[in-house]
Image (tube, rainbow, N blue to C red):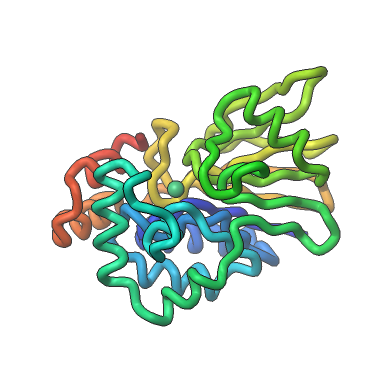
Length: 243
Ligand code: ZN
């Protein structure tokens, strides 16, 4: 089965639409989303509706839960809190119901992959960015493939001896999925690895192959929408730097 994995869309509709268009020639049989459909970005309703329509697995993330009132916004940075409060004020009742229905972790039917928004031991908050956190995530799971989002940094990490090998996976990076792997597709709507293009991961579960892709999108359109809604200026500026 060919699968596209997306994560951390954060209400950035132009990034999401560009990724979905770029996926068309690859014709993935399924799209999986690792959460944070909203928060930060200016088009939350369109993003929730589109992701719900397009994905066969979709997780909830910490920003989604913050918008729903199920996480205290005092735990967010000031700009993230401002984004979550604004999103809460515009989220439609239908989209609230969709977000309320999502789990923070999932497993594929035949155990090929385990999916978490953040990490296995804390599916909502823990960032898997250190070698120790990656090792712990692999030890807490059993599926050959473990997928996490949340950090907005694309990663390809495998166990090696008592530690791990691998690290940041730039656009174009390819992985032969021998043994076990921990992969983070990176973020569609707010990349933080210095590449401002939207991130998406393509998996071929039969051929045991993965490829990280980056997709250019009209960043200035999302920036304009952020400014029109009076959202914090750093949220607009960071998009052009991919940080
Ligand atoms: Zn996020």
